[in-house]
Amino acid sequence: MSDNLSIEIKDLKVAYGEVVVLEHMNLDISDGEFLVLLGASGCGKSTLLNCIAGLLDVKDGEIHIKGKNVTWEEPKDRGIGMVFQSYALYPQMSVKRNLAFGLRNAGTKKDEVERRVAQAAEILQIEPLLDRRPAELSGGQRQRVAIGRALVRDVDVFLFDEPLSNLDAKLRADLRVEIKRLHQRLKNTMIYVTHDQIEAMTLADRIAIMRGGLIQQLDSPYNIYNNPVNKYVAGFIGSPSMNFIEGELTTGDMSIFTSGNLSIPMTGYHMTQNLAAGKHSGVTLGIRPEHVLFGEAAKSSPFSRDVVVEVVEPMGADTLVWTMIDDMSFRLRVEGQLQLASGDTITIGFDPSRGSMFDANEDRI
Image (cartoon, rainbow, N blue to C red; front, side):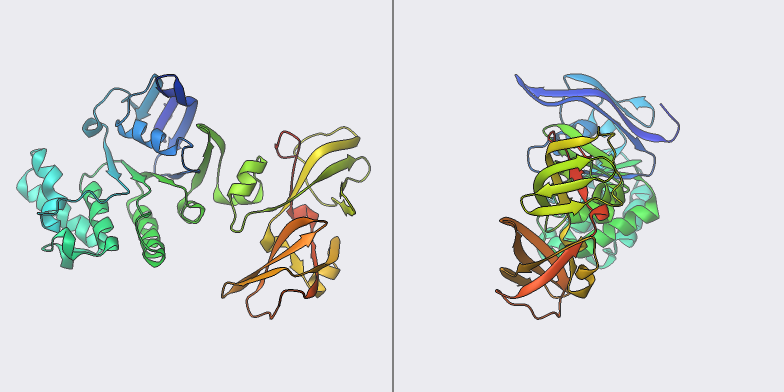
């Protein structure tokens, strides 16, 4: 194992009877890295996290933490702290006793327990809450205590299993920032499971997008957003999701994408595949709504066209506009103060070099 690796997963397999959930899973996580496991329900992300935690038995493969093979070690012996979706606090105990409970059970000396509890309370800004019971706390405060209970263990690796999903939108945003600050301060390895792409994009050093027990793409948020490796990743990342236009690609001296009455020169687009000259059917062109130009800016873009506004969704800072291009639904983001209404005719356009193309197998071209 490399010196700078915190966790190494080798050819992991997990199955429930005949149902295989994870197979041939290989993943290296660097020391101090914030890795987010992102995907829809049932993709295997929580299963993988629970295997690392020791809460699930594996059928095959190995898990190494800080160079030690922990595949069959008990959770308490793996050097991890875990924060769950449910707060799992003892209702009859004060916050202070909740934080100290695990340490006392492990036989930690009293002065060391006091020191760690005080340090965790200071980091998480819950010092005024130490004498309260969980019923007297808000959801955000309870989750801070749950994080603190993992924090006092003074471990190398923290595992988060959808810790913010029970909170309202504002609390989620606030606590997301706190978790980011916590990582920047502690510099511990953190693995975070979520189905929320905003959490993934804002927190992660790298994101592993999972589907059907397989990692589709493992990369930085920047690269996943700008260079998705396949159509699934492209559609999963982004809110609203990417516009997709089905058609065919003609390659040669100039690459041209065509779909119905559309003819779009792919000038400036960097292809990742070496395609033979000629026509390639089953190609999909993807354009993110935020990359669609509007009005005068659209008229000077490589591709533009007049469309009719169907639905307008004001969202404050920006507005989402729904329209159609050749019987295909198409969305764009515009500045929030623009006054548009259903039935208006507008000019939209885009630079194809900012798009993504996928072949008939849905792999990036």
